[in-house]
Amino acid sequence: MLRAFAVLLGIAFIFAGVAGNMPMFVQNGLLFGYVEVDSMHNLIHLITGVIAIMAATRYALTKLFFKLLGLFYSILGVYGFWSHGDLMITHTNFNGNVFHLIVGVISLYLGFTKAKAN
Image (cartoon, rainbow, N blue to C red):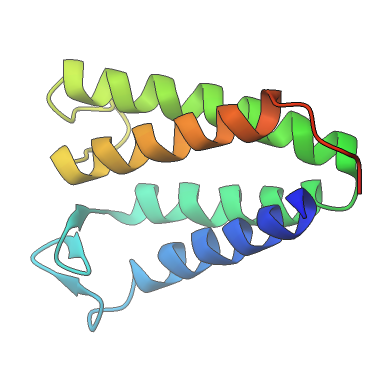
């Protein structure tokens, strides 16, 4: 189940990375009108999606992926609030910071909870 969730998350990140480059999904620099994106942000989404799908090949890799993703995104969310969205290589808005924090906390939960290997 966890591996399938990693694949779905990977597909969602790849979709967000591709959609962020398509004018029909981006209005005034906001993906779906809510989350601020730019080309670096889209590239990071694409890379994250590909890594998620690659990590789903083995259960141990999936757990490690969720631990690392959770740590990275939680720090990113907190830092985004602290720096008012200035992430040095890209910029994000309040909605993006909330999204990063939610993905981070859920990923930490999935990465660190004990579950039956599948």
